[in-house]
Length: 272
Figure: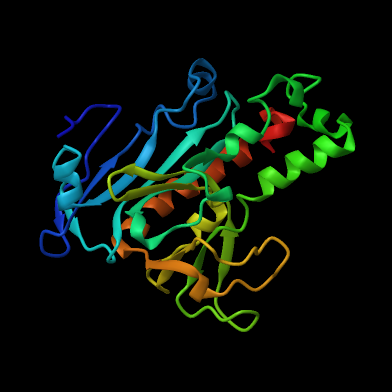
């Protein structure tokens, strides 16, 4: 267990359901969060994160015992929501890490063992930016390389989504798709890993008090949805997101949005 300090505090125990899942919540101090001086001195913002895992998975990976007991859908081993800074920039981002049964066969671009969208973007590679901070340097490449690069990057797109439980295409409900940022088909025996990149606006709207929300993960062999508006639920692995998890991640997303709005003028062009 983490000790209470100015930097971190653990949420008090709240029993929700019988010992199926352990949840731990780590908070950055309010005084540190949002201070420009603090962010400028640190390459990464200390992570704001909420994580839940099946008790068996927690024991398997030697996680500290958490305080809150939840239930996860079958096949889902753990979730982690975190706030982070990317590539030394000022903007804050939201992400969702998913650990699931790899027999469910989640989509992996080019059927690779592992991969990362970050590896295909500036500023990972110096030649993407002819001028520091200017990701548009890519536009000066020859046509063949631009098409090849765009194709590799777009293979990660429209591969995950969050919807309200009442969603019907162009009829009712809410639906937001987003890319897989990184993946490993078997990070542990029988365990697949995905890092998803929902916009913080999407996360902030996930009010469990009004609707139930579902996480969609594209299946291996599913159609290519890059040029198709309607995404078929049957082609996705679908989990209902736990209410207690949503209750805890929404305030983080709201704070991130407020911080990014307040610091819009200080962001790099590639961060906006």
